[in-house]
Image 1 (cartoon, rainbow, N blue to C red):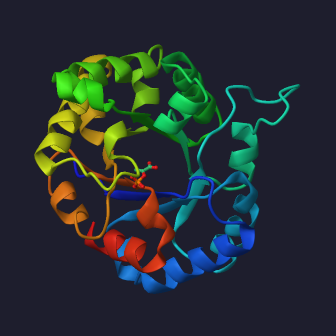
Image 2: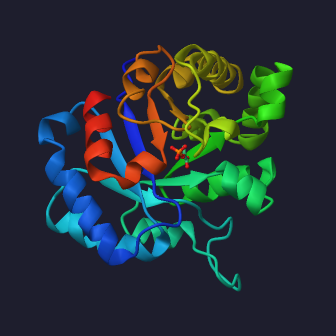
Length: 255
Ligand code: PEP
């Protein structure tokens, strides 16, 4: 089954709403429309930028989508500081990242939290981008495939095959995030192939063939071509390079 590539720009905690408008305008006008037929391009700004990005994308019919970097496991109520899937859906979000390694390590999110967040996203019609990835110690010990398979299974435990069919998986080795040390295409493919085999095991072959598996970790316009040429890599989750309009548009066009 043909899978449309997806390039997702994770802005992390960067850019206020005015800067967000400027960046989205620049990306949209740098990336010719013909590419958007071949690749889905999404931006993932901070929560406070989403309303401005929505107004721009919908008003100017830009053809890009957008989403959030996190959501609450709850739908509403006394959860000070939290943002619900219902709120993100109302803002027109398509995607929401769950289980980014920065949430796992800095905010103590477990596989169970990630699973609950993926379920919360699906309840509101959002597509969760479920992140997994090993640290350097695991990679050096040669245990990376087993580690990622286990993390994926635990992060999707209890989701039905129909629900799994609606997610995106992002393999992001922690040692490659924000370090400039990209995984080799062969190393990234090895884990992404194991991800797909795991999806076949826990859902079905059809689901595994349709779910998009992204690679993330120091992706840029120079290395994206080789990564996306791998049979099980369907796009990229891009951090640093997504804040540079020219580079993000360029790497989206290559994908
Ligand atoms: C990320 O934040 O998901 C990421 C992959 O960052 P970078 O591209 O900067 O490594």
